[in-house]
Each structure stands twice: as structure tokens, then as C-alpha cells.
Length: 55
View 1 (cartoon, rainbow, N blue to C red):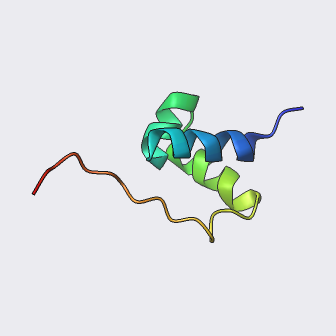
View 2 (view 1 turned 135 degrees about the vertical axis):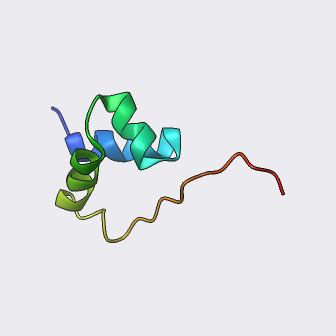
């Protein structure tokens, strides 16, 4: 079975970024966001963009 919402969620967890997850999955950022929302995860999840800058 194929679960695109779960696949998107796992890619976001792995990459710590929606935009990087989209690149990894060869999808647009909007498609990854849509898949999360369709599974009911979009409103409950906040994925901060990780910065490599050290203060």
C-alpha cells in the first residue's frame, strides 16, 4: 500500500524542512503541504526551518 501523506511526513522529519522534503520527494512544496493537510496533520504540525547559523 502507498500512503503519500505518511511518506511526506517522514520526509519532513528526516530533512527537518518542508521545502527539502519536497526536493527529496521530487514534488512541489505545495503538494507536500497538501498531503499533510489531507491526512489531518497540517494543522497539528509545526515544522520550524532549521538554521545552521550559530549565535
